[in-house]
Amino acid sequence: MQKILIVEDAKMNRELLREILETDYIVEAVENGEQALQVLQDQHDGIAALLLDLQMPKADGFTVIAKMRENGWMDRIPVLIISGEDSVEIENKCFELGVSDFIHKPFVDSIVKNRVRNTIELFNCKNQLEKQIEKQSETLKKQEQIIKIQAEQISTAEAFNKLMMEYRCAIMEVETRLNVLNAMFSEEYKRNPFESIKSRLKKPKSIYKKLVKKELPVTIENIKETIADVAGLRVICSFPDDIYRLAELLLKQDDIILLKEKDYIKTPKSNGYRSLHLILSVPVFLPNEKKYMKVEVQFRTIAMDFWASLEHKLKYKKDIDNMEEIEKQLKVCADSIEALDYQMQEIRDKIDASNH
Image 1 (tube, one colour):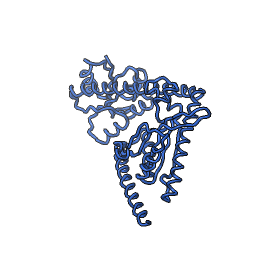
Image 2 (image 1 turned 120 degrees about the vertical axis):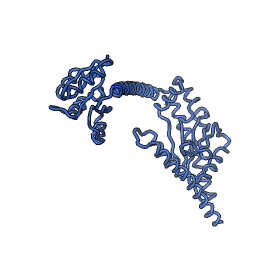
Image 3 (image 1 turned 60 degrees about the vertical axis):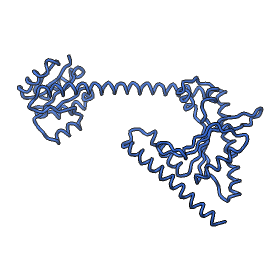
Image 4 (image 1 turned 90 degrees about the horizontal axis):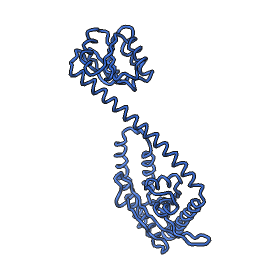
């Protein structure tokens, strides 16, 4: 049987609570806060719940709560306040201090039993859940350490470094072709189809984690065959139609192969994300061979790139208040950005038409 500690200066109330609870629990009762703190000092690991009066001589209930908080006992022992007062301010103060529930005088047997039982069960569930989360966090930390070590080992392997060099060459190849198209487009239409290009090579840790998630061995072949975005470029355009024009011109080149296309401009993601994603196979001219490598190219407008950058930062933030409300606001912003992009494109078309 679990032990309950009752702290109440009125003998009649102590005995009444003992009588209600002793069929289900081992009950120990003391008459003031000093005695309670002594029992807690000696037996805090063995007490399932504390029923605590607030107004007592020597040390009142708030003194006991303060000492329990100081010693960390509130994390292990649920406290139920037994009180004749019906003050909202006092109840709020107690809840803010970590009290689990209230039992009001005069005592009703069924209410006392149910509140004590429910409080203990809920508190035990909370503690078990916290322990489980803590255990999972430790496991995740260990997994992260293993991933880090494995990733470091991969990054020092000669075959892996050779592969990364080939992906870098593929990025340069696509970037060069885009710059050529930009120069030709600028000459013909007197404006540039894109504002900037950002490139990135996936880090060894991210590659390792992706293969582990796919439950695949970490091999050079699996990297090449199953991960399409090791090499990536982001092309930032001024207007939506420039995105499609530039993508079309790039895909017209006879030695570039389109492996996959995801058009999140025509069919946005549920969060409002809009971008055109192309997975390409592009030729890389090495000293002794010509080899095709996969490259992911993302096309976005300037406004959507700003939106995506903010959304990405929030995605990896923890403990953000009102996350659901922020996500709704981001969706509204994304829809507004789309409307603005096409309005600006329409204005540009009018300006171009008036110059001809």
